[in-house]
Length: 368
Image (cartoon, rainbow, N blue to C red):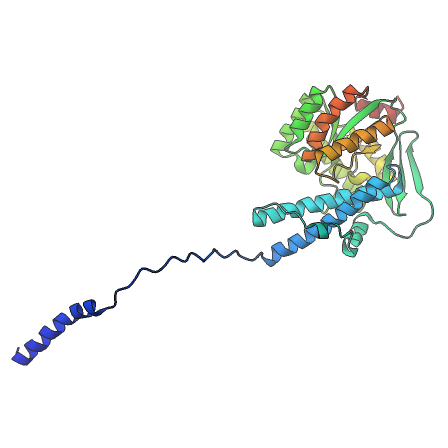
């Protein structure tokens, strides 16, 4: 290596050190105290679900108000009550879907909640129940059992089972619950037992999985009766039994009753159509082929219409006091019904009412 080369290597060897000391010192970066995590915008799906929820919820409120204003034995009441029960199921389904997406329950704003029934929802309800606005000027009634029940056609096309309670004495009440078994059923069953009140639980086959069958056994052990309500309510889409053929209806109800029998050791003697909608031909066939006595109600508590247990309780005791007796309809799947039912049993006992066995329904239907 010559002298010139040695000098060049020496210079290059110290350049990195010169560069380091020549760099400008870097000061610490101030914290981004003004920055906040970005909140992702709701997806189009969630936004759509919320809008749909508000539309159905608004209609639910409107039909609820109409049902409370109508006499319970009127065709209008049957129409409004059926529509309300269908809409409650739709609202609950949408609520569960929104919560699954967002992790939070959803409540609509007051302005949208009071918007009434949209044309879309009105048409949907009419399609579900086959309602027609073309009126004949009279209600067509088809007797099933004199003094017990008949089928009335509402809005010309839709057959509703209309129950009578003339076989009950003043102060006598039959308590019935629909759409279970569910997570609240055992608590309702226990409270009825504690109050010395035999109740009739109309069950859905879709709820008779392992947990549902255990709840069914609890009902039976508590001294209650089980009735057939259907597999779904009554179709998977929420339409009544009039959307099915008679053969399909009998097959579905027979299957549910077999499931009941395999669970508690005996078949049911009772049948209640979802919404109370059933044709006269189906009522007769269900009894003749399956041995199931049709059961309606004479006091609909409208427990689908409110989530406030105090409001439900006050409305229920007012209805019972006004009528003086009756076949009471509630649902063991609603928290407000669970709470109101507990208080109701105590109120009945303290106000001179007697909760009678559901067997009275069979006796009345058979004329015993």
